[in-house]
Length: 210
Image 1: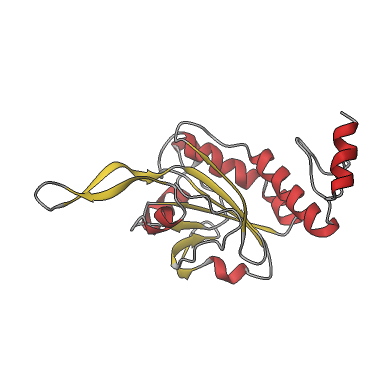
Image 2: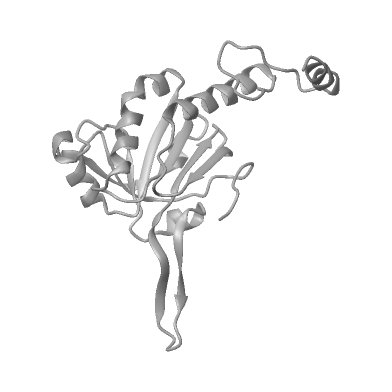
């Protein structure tokens, strides 16, 4: 599993479902360069149990992300047709109807592989045949990407462990505060709280007050 923080987010072009039901080809993060921050996250599979709780929770907080000019994008190894069907399925029937942000189809598993979250790998057996070892799905990876296309934060959970959308928003706030003010954010910092000047003196003062 790779650490992408500080590096360019891997480029991809793939099919996706947007606006809750529109299938588009050649979807890419490149369209947001210079315009928006991006929260790009992976989930294991459509029509599962933990995944819809996260997907719907992101939608419920969408106004908060939009207020911060952040694009939220989900991705799994399912096809765009599977995404579309799930998006048309009512919540009471295990669906995610009402979700409007893009869901990317990673049928080839190459996007998950490039982001270092594929829960397995291709290999050869003793007969020289290609096999897949592990689980052919993505871990719950999440990447916060700045307007220059650089990954500034990443977190990866195992499949049974759902993520905190509030923590994602906190990290967005911290990154944007640093970008706008040049001050760094200490542990458990929240918007409106005091930050720190990134100097040796500032660090010394902060430690001296502890």
